[in-house]
Length: 389
Image (cartoon, rainbow, N blue to C red):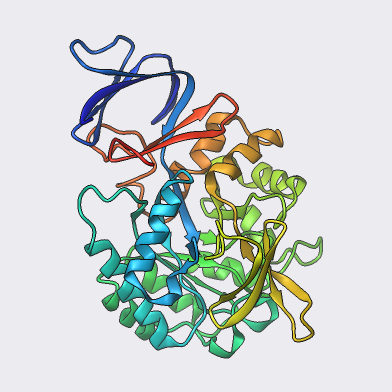
């Protein structure tokens, strides 16, 4: 099916929600919305449902037993196929704090994966690469291995960007590390988003990084200096800095709903980014896995580090997806359905600087969209106008 019109009750379009009507899909790209059915065109009736942009995940390490740090292009594409089946149609494959050479190889493999696809590949599109580390600090290392951490290095970034053929759009660091301001300023000039996290930085150190060009915060609350009335920390900076974005994992486990509400109320939904931080074990059975070179255990929809005594340590990452997180935010009464949908599509795309290619239903763009029930349950996903099976 190449040309058709989708009929639905609600369409989340740029700037507003259209009630009823028809959205044209022609040659795998979006056409225009209209109140009346286009003449002579097949109609796909999705009455009683939402049609929304395909979800965009800008912080995600893998899926279906494939990790970005495996440095395997075929595995990246398998993860992309699994993501599309969960409503994520665009992603920025995310690296970990590992040896410098391995990060180089991971960047090269993501580029290889993006170049190896046919036009009709039915998986989530690779819109960029996110370097989560290695410029972090041990105090809030989480599941990032401190043995591989070092100070921000523009030289290392250029090496990785060369391997990625320019795909890197986002890079994280702890602002208390030496050279962080220079790094933020250089990457901002290059059009790459700098993200602050896995850090014990003071409020003042965070502000200095923002002033130098940092524009976002890594999975807010998790892996950062907390909010205290005499020491606002990185959380305080995430809540109070103007124009910056704040990632947050909305699985109800990493951050409880009340804390998510506090962040959204402080930041505004327009600058709060839903991310999954999903690991390769997402979509897999409970059991033991590896994250980078650290052992982890999946159970009760959450992955933890495994300690030397075989007990579970700190949270390593999630196995959720953006589609579930969007629904959670509405179920928790924090935002409206429209706002939640945009927080899982338009807002993450904008925060990573990839909103020129994804996150919006706009004429001429690839027809990547989701069909949701009125309660926002994911029912169908389309990539390039084709139903994902």
